[in-house]
Length: 500
Image 1: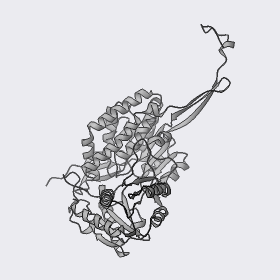
Image 2: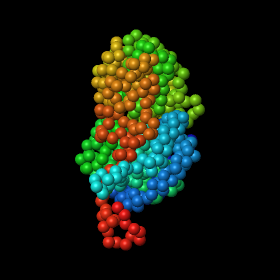
Image 3: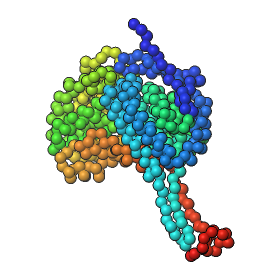
Image 4: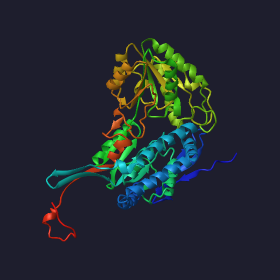
Protein backbone atom coordinates (compact mmCIF):
# COMPACT_ATOMS: atom_id res chain seq x y z
CA UNK A 1 0.00 0.00 0.00
CA UNK A 2 1.45 3.36 -1.04
CA UNK A 3 1.53 6.28 1.34
CA UNK A 4 -0.63 9.14 0.01
CA UNK A 5 1.23 12.29 -0.96
CA UNK A 6 1.01 15.09 1.59
CA UNK A 7 0.83 18.45 -0.16
CA UNK A 8 2.42 21.56 1.32
CA UNK A 9 -0.10 24.42 1.40
CA UNK A 10 1.59 27.83 1.27
CA UNK A 11 0.46 31.41 1.74
CA UNK A 12 -0.36 33.69 -1.23
CA UNK A 13 1.40 37.05 -1.02
CA UNK A 14 2.14 39.59 -3.75
CA UNK A 15 0.63 37.39 -6.44
CA UNK A 16 2.58 34.20 -5.70
CA UNK A 17 2.73 31.21 -3.37
CA UNK A 18 5.02 31.91 -0.44
CA UNK A 19 6.23 29.14 1.92
CA UNK A 20 5.67 29.65 5.63
CA UNK A 21 8.61 30.54 7.81
CA UNK A 22 7.17 30.16 11.30
CA UNK A 23 8.03 26.46 11.53
CA UNK A 24 4.44 25.73 12.60
CA UNK A 25 2.04 23.71 10.48
CA UNK A 26 -1.30 21.92 10.80
CA UNK A 27 -2.48 18.72 9.11
CA UNK A 28 -5.23 18.72 6.49
CA UNK A 29 -7.29 15.56 6.07
CA UNK A 30 -9.65 13.99 3.60
CA UNK A 31 -12.69 13.51 5.87
CA UNK A 32 -13.95 10.65 3.72
CA UNK A 33 -10.88 8.51 4.38
CA UNK A 34 -9.35 10.06 7.51
CA UNK A 35 -5.98 10.26 5.76
CA UNK A 36 -3.75 13.30 5.91
CA UNK A 37 -3.49 14.90 2.48
CA UNK A 38 -1.91 18.25 3.27
CA UNK A 39 0.26 20.27 5.61
CA UNK A 40 -0.73 23.92 5.89
CA UNK A 41 1.64 26.62 7.07
CA UNK A 42 0.53 28.60 10.14
CA UNK A 43 1.64 32.20 9.95
CA UNK A 44 3.42 34.02 12.74
CA UNK A 45 2.56 37.59 13.67
CA UNK A 46 5.64 38.72 11.72
CA UNK A 47 4.45 36.92 8.59
CA UNK A 48 1.00 38.50 8.91
CA UNK A 49 2.64 41.90 9.31
CA UNK A 50 4.67 41.43 6.13
CA UNK A 51 1.60 40.26 4.18
CA UNK A 52 -0.52 43.19 5.35
CA UNK A 53 2.22 45.64 4.40
CA UNK A 54 2.24 44.33 0.83
CA UNK A 55 -1.54 44.70 0.75
CA UNK A 56 -1.25 48.25 2.08
CA UNK A 57 1.26 49.13 -0.63
CA UNK A 58 -1.02 47.67 -3.31
CA UNK A 59 -4.04 49.54 -1.97
CA UNK A 60 -2.56 52.91 -2.82
CA UNK A 61 -2.72 52.11 -6.54
CA UNK A 62 -5.83 49.91 -6.57
CA UNK A 63 -8.00 52.54 -4.89
CA UNK A 64 -7.25 54.93 -7.77
CA UNK A 65 -8.09 52.37 -10.46
CA UNK A 66 -11.08 53.21 -12.60
CA UNK A 67 -14.45 51.63 -11.97
CA UNK A 68 -14.39 50.20 -15.47
CA UNK A 69 -11.06 48.47 -14.80
CA UNK A 70 -12.36 46.97 -11.56
CA UNK A 71 -15.53 45.78 -13.30
CA UNK A 72 -13.45 44.22 -16.09
CA UNK A 73 -11.40 42.23 -13.57
CA UNK A 74 -14.58 41.06 -11.83
CA UNK A 75 -16.18 39.98 -15.10
CA UNK A 76 -13.04 38.02 -15.99
CA UNK A 77 -12.96 36.44 -12.53
CA UNK A 78 -16.61 35.49 -12.89
CA UNK A 79 -15.94 33.70 -16.17
CA UNK A 80 -12.99 31.83 -14.69
CA UNK A 81 -15.12 30.67 -11.77
CA UNK A 82 -17.70 29.37 -14.23
CA UNK A 83 -15.07 27.58 -16.27
CA UNK A 84 -13.33 25.99 -13.30
CA UNK A 85 -16.34 25.17 -11.11
CA UNK A 86 -15.80 21.41 -11.33
CA UNK A 87 -12.12 21.65 -10.34
CA UNK A 88 -12.90 23.95 -7.44
CA UNK A 89 -15.80 21.75 -6.28
CA UNK A 90 -13.50 18.72 -6.24
CA UNK A 91 -11.06 20.60 -3.98
CA UNK A 92 -13.89 21.51 -1.59
CA UNK A 93 -15.15 17.92 -1.46
CA UNK A 94 -11.66 16.53 -0.92
CA UNK A 95 -10.96 18.71 2.13
CA UNK A 96 -14.42 19.45 3.55
CA UNK A 97 -16.23 16.26 2.60
CA UNK A 98 -19.52 17.68 1.32
CA UNK A 99 -21.02 15.97 -1.72
CA UNK A 100 -20.02 17.36 -5.11
CA UNK A 101 -23.49 18.75 -5.84
CA UNK A 102 -23.34 20.74 -2.58
CA UNK A 103 -19.86 21.99 -3.48
CA UNK A 104 -21.08 23.09 -6.91
CA UNK A 105 -24.04 24.80 -5.28
CA UNK A 106 -21.73 26.62 -2.87
CA UNK A 107 -19.70 27.98 -5.76
CA UNK A 108 -22.87 29.06 -7.56
CA UNK A 109 -24.01 31.07 -4.53
CA UNK A 110 -20.58 32.64 -4.29
CA UNK A 111 -20.75 33.52 -7.98
CA UNK A 112 -23.93 35.47 -7.35
CA UNK A 113 -21.93 37.81 -5.15
CA UNK A 114 -19.25 38.26 -7.81
CA UNK A 115 -21.97 39.06 -10.34
CA UNK A 116 -23.46 41.63 -7.95
CA UNK A 117 -20.04 43.25 -7.51
CA UNK A 118 -19.55 43.59 -11.27
CA UNK A 119 -22.12 46.39 -11.04
CA UNK A 120 -19.74 48.51 -8.98
CA UNK A 121 -20.08 51.59 -11.24
CA UNK A 122 -23.75 51.72 -10.28
CA UNK A 123 -23.25 50.61 -6.68
CA UNK A 124 -20.82 53.43 -5.87
CA UNK A 125 -22.82 56.26 -7.39
CA UNK A 126 -23.25 59.14 -4.97
CA UNK A 127 -25.80 61.94 -4.77
CA UNK A 128 -25.70 65.55 -5.96
CA UNK A 129 -27.65 68.62 -4.90
CA UNK A 130 -27.24 71.74 -7.03
CA UNK A 131 -27.79 75.12 -5.39
CA UNK A 132 -28.11 73.81 -1.84
CA UNK A 133 -27.44 77.46 -1.07
CA UNK A 134 -26.85 80.32 -3.46
CA UNK A 135 -23.91 79.27 -5.61
CA UNK A 136 -23.27 76.19 -3.42
CA UNK A 137 -23.45 72.58 -4.59
CA UNK A 138 -23.28 69.51 -2.33
CA UNK A 139 -22.47 65.97 -3.33
CA UNK A 140 -21.65 62.66 -1.68
CA UNK A 141 -19.06 60.04 -2.56
CA UNK A 142 -18.03 56.69 -1.12
CA UNK A 143 -14.35 55.80 -0.80
CA UNK A 144 -12.52 52.54 0.03
CA UNK A 145 -11.15 51.83 3.50
CA UNK A 146 -7.74 50.48 2.44
CA UNK A 147 -6.76 47.01 3.69
CA UNK A 148 -9.63 44.83 4.86
CA UNK A 149 -9.49 41.24 6.12
CA UNK A 150 -11.77 38.22 6.09
CA UNK A 151 -11.65 35.34 8.58
CA UNK A 152 -13.74 32.52 7.17
CA UNK A 153 -15.07 29.12 8.36
CA UNK A 154 -14.43 25.59 7.17
CA UNK A 155 -17.99 24.83 6.10
CA UNK A 156 -18.05 27.13 3.05
CA UNK A 157 -14.43 27.60 1.94
CA UNK A 158 -15.47 29.24 -1.36
CA UNK A 159 -18.83 30.90 -0.82
CA UNK A 160 -18.05 32.85 2.34
CA UNK A 161 -14.76 34.31 1.06
CA UNK A 162 -16.66 35.41 -2.06
CA UNK A 163 -19.29 37.04 0.16
CA UNK A 164 -16.51 39.31 1.34
CA UNK A 165 -13.74 39.74 -1.21
CA UNK A 166 -15.89 40.45 -4.29
CA UNK A 167 -17.44 43.59 -2.81
CA UNK A 168 -14.31 44.61 -0.94
CA UNK A 169 -12.14 44.49 -4.06
CA UNK A 170 -14.80 46.09 -6.27
CA UNK A 171 -14.96 49.02 -3.85
CA UNK A 172 -11.21 49.64 -4.24
CA UNK A 173 -9.87 47.88 -1.15
CA UNK A 174 -7.19 45.23 -0.91
CA UNK A 175 -8.30 42.02 0.80
CA UNK A 176 -6.42 39.68 3.15
CA UNK A 177 -8.08 36.26 3.60
CA UNK A 178 -7.41 34.06 6.61
CA UNK A 179 -9.28 30.85 5.72
CA UNK A 180 -9.94 27.90 7.98
CA UNK A 181 -6.84 25.77 8.40
CA UNK A 182 -9.06 22.65 8.10
CA UNK A 183 -9.70 23.09 4.34
CA UNK A 184 -7.38 25.82 3.06
CA UNK A 185 -6.64 24.77 -0.53
CA UNK A 186 -9.74 26.36 -2.11
CA UNK A 187 -8.47 29.80 -1.07
CA UNK A 188 -5.28 29.33 -3.09
CA UNK A 189 -7.30 28.25 -6.12
CA UNK A 190 -9.32 31.46 -5.81
CA UNK A 191 -6.08 33.45 -5.58
CA UNK A 192 -4.85 31.88 -8.81
CA UNK A 193 -8.11 32.79 -10.55
CA UNK A 194 -7.94 36.39 -9.32
CA UNK A 195 -4.44 36.69 -10.76
CA UNK A 196 -5.49 35.21 -14.10
CA UNK A 197 -8.40 37.66 -14.16
CA UNK A 198 -5.94 40.54 -14.15
CA UNK A 199 -6.09 41.58 -10.50
CA UNK A 200 -2.85 43.38 -9.59
CA UNK A 201 -0.49 41.58 -7.22
CA UNK A 202 -1.11 42.36 -3.57
CA UNK A 203 -4.81 43.14 -3.94
CA UNK A 204 -5.84 39.61 -2.87
CA UNK A 205 -3.71 37.93 -0.20
CA UNK A 206 -4.08 34.59 1.59
CA UNK A 207 -2.48 34.06 4.99
CA UNK A 208 -3.07 30.71 6.67
CA UNK A 209 -2.99 30.41 10.41
CA UNK A 210 -4.61 29.89 13.77
CA UNK A 211 -5.27 32.26 16.68
CA UNK A 212 -1.86 33.91 16.35
CA UNK A 213 -2.65 34.99 12.80
CA UNK A 214 -6.17 36.08 13.75
CA UNK A 215 -4.90 38.23 16.61
CA UNK A 216 -2.23 39.74 14.38
CA UNK A 217 -4.92 40.85 11.92
CA UNK A 218 -7.14 42.19 14.70
CA UNK A 219 -4.26 44.22 16.13
CA UNK A 220 -2.62 45.44 12.92
CA UNK A 221 -2.75 49.20 12.42
CA UNK A 222 -3.03 48.89 8.64
CA UNK A 223 -6.14 46.67 8.72
CA UNK A 224 -9.19 48.93 8.63
CA UNK A 225 -11.97 46.34 8.81
CA UNK A 226 -12.58 42.69 9.67
CA UNK A 227 -15.31 40.39 8.37
CA UNK A 228 -15.89 37.10 10.18
CA UNK A 229 -18.20 34.09 9.99
CA UNK A 230 -18.04 31.36 12.64
CA UNK A 231 -19.23 30.38 16.10
CA UNK A 232 -20.78 32.88 18.50
CA UNK A 233 -17.98 32.79 21.14
CA UNK A 234 -15.35 33.52 18.48
CA UNK A 235 -17.55 36.13 16.80
CA UNK A 236 -17.87 37.96 20.11
CA UNK A 237 -14.11 37.79 20.62
CA UNK A 238 -13.41 39.08 17.09
CA UNK A 239 -15.88 41.91 17.52
CA UNK A 240 -14.63 43.02 20.92
CA UNK A 241 -10.93 42.89 20.10
CA UNK A 242 -11.33 44.39 16.64
CA UNK A 243 -13.51 47.30 17.72
CA UNK A 244 -11.24 47.95 20.70
CA UNK A 245 -8.52 48.53 18.10
CA UNK A 246 -10.71 51.00 16.22
CA UNK A 247 -11.67 48.72 13.35
CA UNK A 248 -14.96 48.18 11.61
CA UNK A 249 -16.13 44.65 12.38
CA UNK A 250 -18.96 42.51 11.05
CA UNK A 251 -18.92 39.19 12.90
CA UNK A 252 -21.56 36.58 12.11
CA UNK A 253 -21.98 34.01 14.87
CA UNK A 254 -23.77 30.74 15.46
CA UNK A 255 -27.30 29.59 14.81
CA UNK A 256 -30.08 27.36 16.05
CA UNK A 257 -32.58 27.65 13.24
CA UNK A 258 -36.20 26.65 13.91
CA UNK A 259 -38.91 25.54 11.48
CA UNK A 260 -42.42 26.25 12.72
CA UNK A 261 -44.78 23.66 11.21
CA UNK A 262 -48.47 24.59 11.51
CA UNK A 263 -51.29 22.01 11.44
CA UNK A 264 -52.36 23.10 7.94
CA UNK A 265 -48.91 22.64 6.38
CA UNK A 266 -48.38 20.49 3.31
CA UNK A 267 -46.70 17.69 5.25
CA UNK A 268 -44.87 16.16 2.29
CA UNK A 269 -43.43 19.50 1.21
CA UNK A 270 -42.49 20.36 4.78
CA UNK A 271 -40.84 16.99 5.43
CA UNK A 272 -38.85 17.11 2.17
CA UNK A 273 -37.68 20.63 2.96
CA UNK A 274 -36.77 19.89 6.56
CA UNK A 275 -34.81 16.73 5.67
CA UNK A 276 -32.81 18.61 3.04
CA UNK A 277 -32.15 21.57 5.33
CA UNK A 278 -31.33 19.52 8.44
CA UNK A 279 -29.03 16.89 6.94
CA UNK A 280 -27.56 18.51 3.83
CA UNK A 281 -23.78 19.05 4.13
CA UNK A 282 -23.99 16.84 7.26
CA UNK A 283 -25.71 19.69 9.10
CA UNK A 284 -22.51 21.77 8.96
CA UNK A 285 -24.30 24.91 7.78
CA UNK A 286 -25.17 28.03 9.73
CA UNK A 287 -28.52 28.03 7.92
CA UNK A 288 -29.30 24.36 8.66
CA UNK A 289 -32.66 23.68 10.28
CA UNK A 290 -31.87 21.99 13.58
CA UNK A 291 -35.23 22.32 15.38
CA UNK A 292 -38.67 21.46 14.00
CA UNK A 293 -41.44 23.01 16.11
CA UNK A 294 -44.59 20.96 15.58
CA UNK A 295 -47.78 22.87 16.41
CA UNK A 296 -50.92 21.14 17.66
CA UNK A 297 -51.59 17.61 16.44
CA UNK A 298 -49.20 17.59 13.52
CA UNK A 299 -46.27 16.24 15.56
CA UNK A 300 -46.81 12.51 15.00
CA UNK A 301 -47.39 12.97 11.28
CA UNK A 302 -44.31 15.18 10.90
CA UNK A 303 -42.02 12.81 12.80
CA UNK A 304 -43.27 9.88 10.77
CA UNK A 305 -42.82 11.73 7.47
CA UNK A 306 -39.26 12.77 8.31
CA UNK A 307 -38.22 9.37 9.66
CA UNK A 308 -39.68 7.60 6.60
CA UNK A 309 -37.41 9.63 4.32
CA UNK A 310 -34.12 8.97 6.12
CA UNK A 311 -33.50 5.33 5.08
CA UNK A 312 -33.43 6.43 1.44
CA UNK A 313 -30.50 8.80 2.05
CA UNK A 314 -27.05 7.41 1.35
CA UNK A 315 -24.11 8.38 3.55
CA UNK A 316 -20.69 8.08 1.96
CA UNK A 317 -17.77 9.88 0.34
CA UNK A 318 -18.80 13.17 -1.19
CA UNK A 319 -17.07 12.29 -4.46
CA UNK A 320 -19.05 9.05 -4.90
CA UNK A 321 -22.04 9.10 -7.22
CA UNK A 322 -25.39 8.83 -5.47
CA UNK A 323 -24.15 10.06 -2.09
CA UNK A 324 -26.60 12.31 -0.24
CA UNK A 325 -24.51 13.17 2.82
CA UNK A 326 -20.78 13.13 3.34
CA UNK A 327 -18.61 12.98 6.46
CA UNK A 328 -18.10 15.58 9.16
CA UNK A 329 -15.00 17.74 9.07
CA UNK A 330 -12.92 15.98 11.78
CA UNK A 331 -13.05 12.90 13.97
CA UNK A 332 -13.24 15.13 17.06
CA UNK A 333 -16.27 16.96 15.72
CA UNK A 334 -17.98 13.70 14.76
CA UNK A 335 -17.50 12.38 18.29
CA UNK A 336 -18.78 15.64 19.79
CA UNK A 337 -21.95 15.45 17.71
CA UNK A 338 -22.47 11.79 18.71
CA UNK A 339 -22.06 12.88 22.33
CA UNK A 340 -24.97 15.31 21.93
CA UNK A 341 -27.18 12.45 20.74
CA UNK A 342 -26.28 10.49 23.86
CA UNK A 343 -26.99 13.51 26.07
CA UNK A 344 -30.38 14.00 24.42
CA UNK A 345 -31.36 10.39 25.01
CA UNK A 346 -30.20 10.56 28.63
CA UNK A 347 -32.24 13.73 29.16
CA UNK A 348 -35.43 12.02 28.03
CA UNK A 349 -35.67 12.71 24.30
CA UNK A 350 -36.94 9.86 22.14
CA UNK A 351 -34.32 8.71 19.64
CA UNK A 352 -36.50 7.99 16.61
CA UNK A 353 -33.52 7.50 14.26
CA UNK A 354 -30.05 7.04 15.73
CA UNK A 355 -27.20 8.18 13.50
CA UNK A 356 -24.70 6.36 15.67
CA UNK A 357 -26.20 3.03 14.61
CA UNK A 358 -26.52 3.78 10.91
CA UNK A 359 -24.52 1.77 8.39
CA UNK A 360 -21.81 4.24 7.33
CA UNK A 361 -18.26 3.79 6.00
CA UNK A 362 -15.81 2.76 8.70
CA UNK A 363 -13.01 4.92 7.27
CA UNK A 364 -13.29 8.68 7.58
CA UNK A 365 -15.34 10.86 9.87
CA UNK A 366 -18.86 9.60 9.17
CA UNK A 367 -21.98 9.78 11.31
CA UNK A 368 -25.51 8.95 10.28
CA UNK A 369 -28.61 11.10 10.55
CA UNK A 370 -30.33 11.45 13.93
CA UNK A 371 -33.96 12.40 14.62
CA UNK A 372 -34.93 13.23 18.20
CA UNK A 373 -38.55 13.69 19.35
CA UNK A 374 -39.87 15.11 22.58
CA UNK A 375 -36.99 17.56 22.94
CA UNK A 376 -37.45 20.32 25.51
CA UNK A 377 -35.72 23.73 25.77
CA UNK A 378 -33.69 22.70 28.84
CA UNK A 379 -31.81 19.96 26.94
CA UNK A 380 -28.33 20.58 25.53
CA UNK A 381 -29.46 19.25 22.15
CA UNK A 382 -31.84 22.20 22.03
CA UNK A 383 -29.68 24.90 23.62
CA UNK A 384 -26.36 24.32 21.86
CA UNK A 385 -25.35 24.75 18.25
CA UNK A 386 -24.52 21.13 17.37
CA UNK A 387 -23.44 21.74 13.77
CA UNK A 388 -24.11 18.17 12.72
CA UNK A 389 -26.81 15.89 11.26
CA UNK A 390 -29.15 16.04 14.25
CA UNK A 391 -32.78 17.25 14.04
CA UNK A 392 -34.74 17.91 17.23
CA UNK A 393 -38.53 17.99 17.29
CA UNK A 394 -40.18 20.20 19.90
CA UNK A 395 -43.95 19.97 20.33
CA UNK A 396 -46.13 22.94 21.24
CA UNK A 397 -49.89 23.42 21.45
CA UNK A 398 -50.31 26.74 19.65
CA UNK A 399 -48.75 29.14 17.17
CA UNK A 400 -48.22 31.68 19.96
CA UNK A 401 -46.32 29.11 22.03
CA UNK A 402 -44.11 28.23 19.07
CA UNK A 403 -43.42 31.86 18.26
CA UNK A 404 -42.48 32.59 21.86
CA UNK A 405 -40.13 29.59 21.87
CA UNK A 406 -38.30 30.87 18.79
CA UNK A 407 -38.13 34.43 20.08
CA UNK A 408 -36.64 33.31 23.42
CA UNK A 409 -33.72 31.58 21.71
CA UNK A 410 -30.39 33.39 21.96
CA UNK A 411 -29.66 32.70 18.31
CA UNK A 412 -31.64 34.53 15.65
CA UNK A 413 -29.99 33.70 12.36
CA UNK A 414 -32.67 32.06 10.22
CA UNK A 415 -36.12 30.53 10.63
CA UNK A 416 -38.93 29.14 8.50
CA UNK A 417 -42.67 28.61 8.72
CA UNK A 418 -44.62 25.92 6.88
CA UNK A 419 -48.29 26.73 6.36
CA UNK A 420 -50.98 27.22 3.74
CA UNK A 421 -52.36 30.24 5.64
CA UNK A 422 -51.17 33.55 4.19
CA UNK A 423 -52.39 35.44 7.24
CA UNK A 424 -50.38 33.23 9.60
CA UNK A 425 -47.29 33.57 7.41
CA UNK A 426 -47.62 37.36 7.30
CA UNK A 427 -48.04 37.49 11.06
CA UNK A 428 -45.00 35.29 11.54
CA UNK A 429 -42.73 37.40 9.34
CA UNK A 430 -43.74 40.48 11.31
CA UNK A 431 -43.52 38.99 14.80
CA UNK A 432 -40.56 36.63 14.69
CA UNK A 433 -37.33 38.14 16.05
CA UNK A 434 -34.95 36.56 13.53
CA UNK A 435 -32.87 38.15 10.79
CA UNK A 436 -33.77 35.86 7.85
CA UNK A 437 -37.21 34.33 7.41
CA UNK A 438 -38.45 31.65 5.03
CA UNK A 439 -42.11 31.06 4.21
CA UNK A 440 -42.33 27.48 2.97
CA UNK A 441 -38.62 27.95 2.17
CA UNK A 442 -36.34 25.95 4.51
CA UNK A 443 -33.03 27.78 3.97
CA UNK A 444 -33.84 31.47 3.44
CA UNK A 445 -30.37 32.63 2.36
CA UNK A 446 -30.89 36.02 0.68
CA UNK A 447 -29.94 36.46 -2.95
CA UNK A 448 -26.82 38.54 -3.57
CA UNK A 449 -28.64 41.84 -4.08
CA UNK A 450 -29.99 41.68 -0.53
CA UNK A 451 -27.76 41.10 2.52
CA UNK A 452 -27.12 38.16 4.85
CA UNK A 453 -27.21 38.28 8.63
CA UNK A 454 -29.09 37.38 11.78
CA UNK A 455 -30.01 39.09 15.02
CA UNK A 456 -29.10 38.65 18.70
CA UNK A 457 -26.10 36.35 19.29
CA UNK A 458 -25.93 35.50 15.59
CA UNK A 459 -24.52 38.91 14.67
CA UNK A 460 -22.02 41.27 16.29
CA UNK A 461 -21.91 44.67 14.70
CA UNK A 462 -24.71 46.41 12.85
CA UNK A 463 -23.90 45.58 9.23
CA UNK A 464 -24.97 42.42 7.46
CA UNK A 465 -22.82 40.54 4.95
CA UNK A 466 -22.64 41.13 1.17
CA UNK A 467 -25.22 42.94 -0.96
CA UNK A 468 -25.93 46.65 -0.37
CA UNK A 469 -24.82 46.50 3.27
CA UNK A 470 -21.55 44.92 2.12
CA UNK A 471 -20.89 47.90 -0.14
CA UNK A 472 -21.54 50.23 2.78
CA UNK A 473 -19.27 48.21 5.08
CA UNK A 474 -16.29 48.32 2.72
CA UNK A 475 -16.58 52.05 1.99
CA UNK A 476 -17.00 55.24 3.97
CA UNK A 477 -19.06 58.20 2.97
CA UNK A 478 -17.76 61.67 2.32
CA UNK A 479 -19.82 64.79 1.63
CA UNK A 480 -18.33 67.67 -0.36
CA UNK A 481 -19.77 71.18 -0.20
CA UNK A 482 -18.39 73.48 -2.88
CA UNK A 483 -18.67 77.07 -4.05
CA UNK A 484 -16.86 78.61 -7.00
CA UNK A 485 -16.34 82.32 -7.73
CA UNK A 486 -18.96 83.81 -10.01
CA UNK A 487 -17.51 83.64 -13.58
CA UNK A 488 -19.01 87.05 -14.33
CA UNK A 489 -16.72 88.69 -11.78
CA UNK A 490 -13.56 86.78 -12.68
CA UNK A 491 -10.62 88.65 -14.27
CA UNK A 492 -9.33 85.49 -15.97
CA UNK A 493 -9.81 85.37 -19.74
CA UNK A 494 -11.97 82.27 -20.24
CA UNK A 495 -12.03 82.62 -24.00
CA UNK A 496 -15.81 83.01 -24.14
CA UNK A 497 -18.31 85.69 -23.02
CA UNK A 498 -19.25 85.78 -19.39
CA UNK A 499 -22.96 85.68 -18.67
CA UNK A 500 -25.00 85.49 -15.54
